[in-house]
Image 1 (spheres, chains in turn brown, green):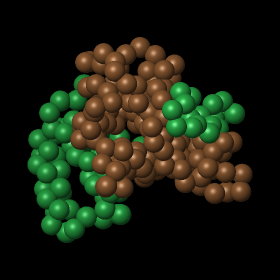
Image 2 (cartoon, rainbow over the protein chains, first blue to last red):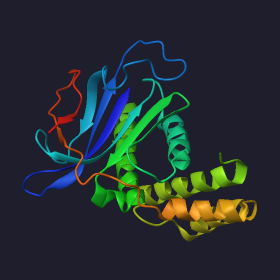
Image 3 (cartoon, rainbow over the protein chains, first blue to last red):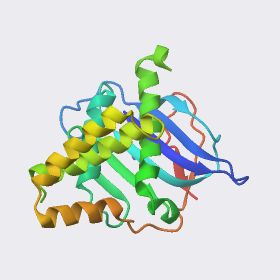
Length: 139
Length: 87
């Protein structure tokens, strides 16, 4: 799967986090993400959460996650926590692979000043969409 | 490379951040105290240098561009397009 959480701002100033959830279908993904995923092979969009409707909004920040379609949030969060903890607070973007998951984070300068809050918002939005996709009743 | 307590301390900070975000800002008092106790335990096993590194890391502002130079893209269900492109 590819899960992209994007903090965007529209020309009229409307701002929010949109999330896009893609699936890759049957694929050999026993270890690290297969080559080309997510940027050459994002998969097929299966769900989204849109706060500020695209297209044409400026992307101020994003968190990209790639993991097997069957990965649950517990596995992703475990790897994500290890990924963030291993960053050294230096220049963005941050990119890395932990477990079966790939992560990339990029923030505009104004959001990077409080990267903890920005990243928390991006992660929480991603979690909600994946949880809703896994259990539609959980919404 | 970080080992043991120093790595776990950073992970606990991130986990606490996520728990606070999920709960809308703050945790119930008991849970907050439990997390603080976990952090304290790690802290006690860290060297002075590891403690300094952890504080510097958490307070850091990483270098970032003024603008990312990207705009979002409308993607329909089933489409295989990235959700953003260069502006």
